[in-house]
Image (cartoon, rainbow, N blue to C red; front, top):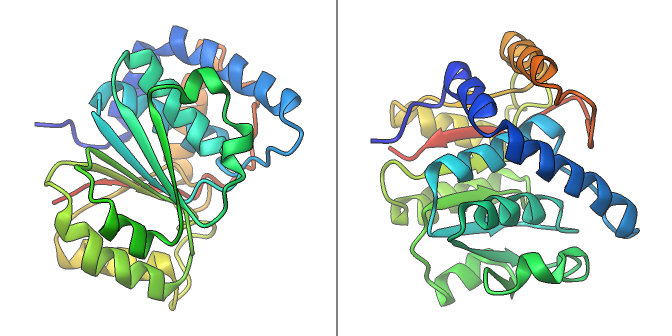
Length: 232
């Protein structure tokens, strides 16, 4: 059974994978300077947690909904590369990631599917071992994925949804509120490193990073609004 997503568990992952993470942070910092069209979305904590959960979970297939310029895509691909196994299938209306993802990361482990995930995920059915969602941040889109996509994902699968906790709680009519209502209805907890929604967790993780020499920013937007959970 997969470990519960807690601050202690994530701190332990930082310690376990610190050497590899140090290398990945250096690679991502270099990528920002060599890919002038790359716009970074994930803050450092949530990008690193994504990488660490992929290292620990060793998913065979990661499905990413929304890549934009490919910042999250490259973090995911580096996790799969460092595991020595696994593939990523990305669904997005925008194909800019294909310009920015390095060929050596993409080769043999990345498929980009252009189009609206509400259609393309139906047309290209995947076995999902890790689900990453960062697309249309609307209540209607969230109602689609909780109603149509989540029932197809196996219990225990790690799921992450971006842009939920820019504040202490989501707006009343929003993707985040739909998701939190779904989690509550299924008796399922979640984890976030959001500075506003979980300030103690945010400080604890940054303290660990400081002790490990990993605190210098790669891209730190300071919000870390992503929500993580295990599928019930």
